Length: 443
Image 1 (tube, rainbow, N blue to C red):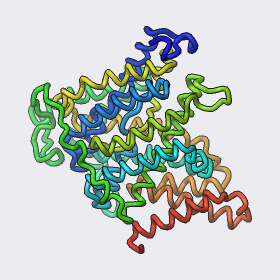
Image 2: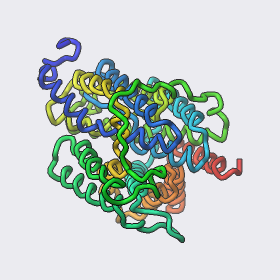
Image 3: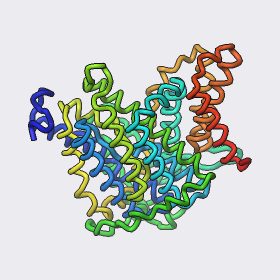
């Protein structure tokens, strides 16, 4: 094991790597509860979503450790899962099985681009302000979903507004404050502890005071005990409709999933590599090609298992801070996911008001790149602002990214800087126009 993971070369040991793996798991295990809750809104049963989340996270994280030898957690991505549920399935009306087929094909393309290093040229062609703004927009998207799921924000003509202040929203606000305090205090596993505390706070709703029937599946109580143990639910494994997903009307979905996954993965690998100095002799992220191949398979397998795209997690930095430097850290993290296949009833106890603060805090962290955008440069500020604004307002990553890219190109042309537009970016722009035509029904 020591020789395989190059522990001596990386100046670490088995004990340190195990501790780092446990730390990364605690930092990222909130996905076990949050992802199935989001997928349930797309019509995928909670138990099936939990099983898919756990299996995908375990298999691909172990793969990251064994093949790419990097201490990185891989799991269904936040932001991509929201796009899958709220844009593709709910807004566009796509059957979730067809949407899973789209995820599968985006994974196939991702793997091929990684194997042949084409993804490098695509990433370099994408304007920096759009990449940064995309991350910020996704963060706002997640925060908005959290606020809506908690009942704090509701539809109020002509736009939206604050909902009724009741037992649920008051509990949510106290819970959000608790999570903020835990995060500010840098408590390890802040998200997990926060969700547990809010769940306990929500137990009396509908029993001792308040009523959840208006927003919680018509049930007076917010939390209902249904045991601890359950057999894993594999009912959505291989449910994807891969051939139906190849219809031209779904091509924009496939490529949006692909682009967002690539942005997320590259950003994560660069950030984690900087944090842990995990670089090769050229200063690039270590084993980046192998890592991206694993990431691509995480997306492909997401469609197979019945969940949204898998991607690398920035929470991996928590384990790296504990000294994790090799793939052994990832293997330990992946193995820790497996027992949770058997506890879906326990996980279902966690209500939406408990996961909402986590979505909001993830949004906070994803908004970090906003200070890297040159707001005093109008050529950069306009496309960045449009991207950030349109993603949450339209509930669509596609709309935000497409209009951001097209406005960036138009501004460069108007300013007489057409030479800065690469052939690859022109190709992406043309494809963006095609995606808009399909989405609006013109094509």
